[in-house]
Length: 400
Image 1 (cartoon, rainbow, N blue to C red):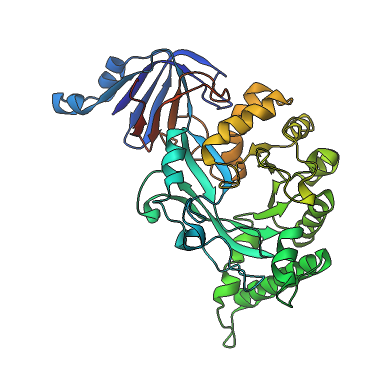
Image 2: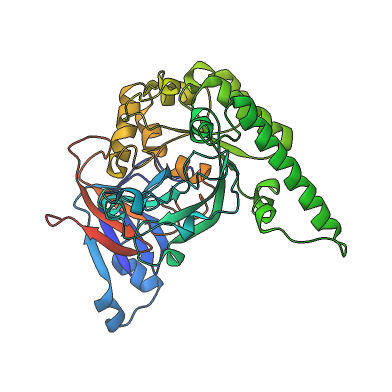
């Protein structure tokens, strides 16, 4: 058992107080057993009898009045699939020879030995949505993973977790020199529609069966999207690309997240009407291409004020993974309420990624992914004191 006490807890859970003073968290195995400020370690031992050997193995962690939160969540990145300091040899982010590759699985390319995973743990980031880049109209399947461990199969929370699609300049730039489509936004939309149309045909044929039906590895990848088990993960920057993505998602009746959503603040009313959430960023990056000329930290606050669920991303390695809480802090500085800044990298991110039943808040029965900070993590001088994943301490600051 892990027992954390003397904590200032921000559980990020609707049914719990916003803040629990002098709180405790009891963890049994990989799950949260109890949370609050109305019990002690001895109470837990009486409620769940423990012999002397078990008690000696328990870890009692004095939080010393510091801030305790759910582990932070990166909602969109390429950690381990675009490795740091390795150049081409470590870049498996885009299969750039074909514009439509739904059958690709991120889990087959993510290297958990990438230094970014250790950086994430040290920043209190306990899970991340990781997948292909945006060079293709359809890039492949994202996976939602924990950030500590060597064998990726042991880190998976949900896979597939989303299907990457991309609009705008990236697919155009990649394929314009290859003498094949797409080289225009019209072609991107047309190719995605054609792909979804064929996928619907495939699903119908599969449902009806018949001797002439042949399974397709390519189109099987679309079934979780068409069945609304996972969303399209749409790379969109410009307002017109956001509108095109919404138009296609509505046309085919699928769920979608609006990733980057750079000009979202210019069309907040229409995004709210669509019902789709936004994953914003990376606003720490430079405005390196024309479609991100309106990038601004104020976008998160404007979308929140319009009733849109918002998460924040570093898009690592575009911005380094450890800057995630600082990105949220800059959004708060630009108008997003403080608690919403914290939600944007915890429960909102979990909800958007479809894993809020396991992570994103500190609640009984959820995964014991916990971060202890020396102050508000959105502030630049705040240290991560301790990181817990699945009930195990995976990082502890030497001064804590």
